[in-house]
Amino acid sequence: MPIAPPPEELLDQPSMELMDLFGRMRSLTDDGGFGGTLPALWQCSDESQGIKKALFGYVYNCPVFNLGRVGALLDPTRLLPASHHGRDLVILGGSHLGAREEDGVGTVERVHGRMAPCCGMLYRMLEEYLLVYRRAASLITLFRGVGGLKIELPYKYLFRKPLGSTVRIHVRWQRLVDGEALRDSSHGKIYHLHRDFIARHEQALSDLGTEPRSIGELLDPDIFSFSKQLDLESLDTKALLEASVFDFLPDIVTSQRPHRRLADVNTWREFHRLAAYLTDSFDSGERNILVIAGLTLDHSIRRNTFVPQFGFWMEQGRALQARYFGPPEIRALLDEQPVWRPEQSFLEYAGVE
Image 1 (cartoon, rainbow, N blue to C red):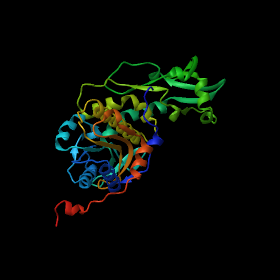
Image 2: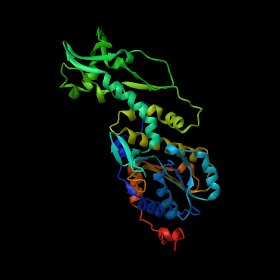
Image 3: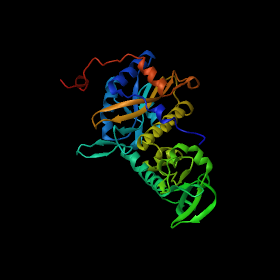
Image 4: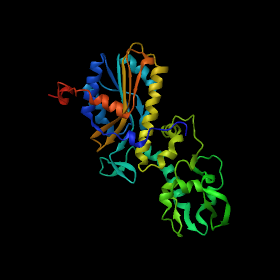
């Protein structure tokens, strides 16, 4: 893949408590000479994100402008009206995930007491792809036979099907088989396993016996792709999200934590969309702009922590001198800042005596 998301381990940085995060951001922007600062946020519309939004506005003493929609998809055109409401901009955004993970899916307890996938929008888009991938990983089998290691490929993965409205997986069987089919099976064909595949997975295949075993996680992103007729003109949230991350879905479904990987990839995509818009299309004038993007972890619908992953800093509208920060760099920059604290309590700020 010519363009690939950052590795999972690079994005898996320590999380920060929200008031520590916002306090450090406030110190950073105060020191950077920000004035008339409007806080703006792109995030999912989930109820679990509400307190985060309130605290962000509390620290910056200004209600937060909304730049996002369900699924943490960014609408960069909302920056134009935002620019009329303030001078300098401090923007926070990214996907969210339930901090409790079950079978690679982040979950959170909703107000009615039930556990549910969170972010639900990301999970609904991911679920169909996960099902198709896991079915293929289960049905393609490997075994040791006379003459070496063999693979059984069901016919459904040997024929390429046309694009349709449902998700299909296309197995690059040429990377799995060595030579012509040895024989037919009840629902497919038996081949010698490709020597390059054997060399790449020598340790994992060392204990393979005569009993067929599912290929499982050895069905990696180099061996398959997905196909689906995407609606590139649709403004539906699921369609927009699917089109944005489609090329990266083989990497996502093969992760041990596919829900989190999708959340991270979505944040990465939307952050760079925003940065490109700010440098190429937005009339920033002489504004200072700080963007912090990352993953919100929902410990409950009332408590979040935040994993900083990306940063963008533009001083006085100078797009060519804009600075970009990766996961370790943005964390180090935030850690260098003192934690600014509001003089008023939150209740006092809200006007409660």
